[in-house]
Image (tube, rainbow, N blue to C red; front, side):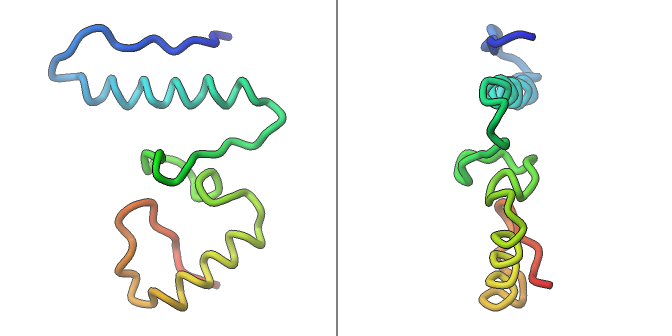
Length: 89
């Protein structure tokens, strides 16, 4: 098990994809270094590929409350672009 993430050395037409792969590798290394803690990501650092629980918390009550608030304050789902929350139950 590696504990290092290697930064890409060259740029070219594959650089954006390589950048995403590197960012995911760094996140995986970070999470492996904290085996007793659930994976989490600061919302502004999220890539959009993370599950909502990783960004907003793993507790079911927290996610339910967030979804209910989203449904109440954004019923037409206009605020859905960056890390969207699916409406309430």
